[in-house]
Amino acid sequence: MNLAYWMCQILGWGSYTAIGIAIAVREAGPQKSIFIGFAAFFFYSIGLTHLLRREIRRRQWLSLPFRKSIPRLLGASVLTGLAISALVVMISAALERKFDWGRQGASAMAISVTTFTVGWTIFYVAITSTRKVLTGQLALRQAELRALENQVNPHFLFNCLNTIRGMIVESPAKAQEMVTRLANILRYNLRGDRAPTVPLSEEIEVVSDYLSLEAARFEDRLRVTMDIGAGAAAVPVPPMLLQTLVENALKHGIAHLPEGGEVRIEASLERDSLALRVVNSGDLAEPAPNGTRIGLKNARERLRLLYGDRATLELQAADHRVIATVRIPRL
Image (cartoon, rainbow, N blue to C red):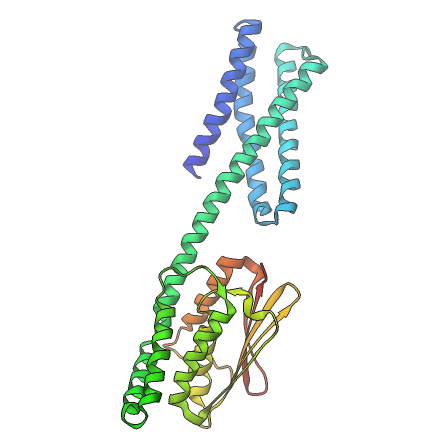
């Protein structure tokens, strides 16, 4: 169990119990029943709020949208507070062998205990949500670093440099253009101030540079088409997501076809999400024994960290084509 959680439980309900004992002793004098009753209150209050915490976690209320989680949290907190209040009255009556609360006193006590329980829930939700955000940010940063480590592909870099070297004499202007495009890709890959998302238009620009460089290597074996729907270019997407899909299409698709093939990039708005597709000629094969498909794994992990289960990445094969489809919610 989390030590900090139990320390907060003990300090919180311990303080409330101590204040209650002080008020009761001042009004009725030191009585054995007061100390026994408040000792029991201390333990069953911790027990019931711990059950409340377990239900919050089991039912995953903190993962629900705000408008759905608040009524559940508030209702459960009020019920827990009323349950604690009922135990206070029953144990007090059993210890004193009479009901000495009165309607006004019982109501005041129930309001006080329920308010404290709701405050307990607010404090727990605030601490848990803050920790969840910080943990998610750290995990996202680690995933981005892993993705960046694998984006600057040494084989791609060496192939580009060899192609450029061969063009320096034959076509200096073309070689200069390729150097510029390569510099754009490296600059985009190595940006240290990168935000969690960028407009799709930025991704398309760097992917266009990437495809232009690969076209010089594949020559007539690579054919590229793009279909970017209205409004799609402005939708934020994780950086290097499209680059990963396109690189995967070339590496595992076009590169294995002697006659080459086509890579088609499509983007369109569908209700409340962006549908991004990369279609390449070829068949969907099992990864090689020494292959890990780490680019796609990182892409899925980053989508999960940013959007939860609202974003998906799927690979499908149909008619000697492989289709990578990403759906991202429009925030």
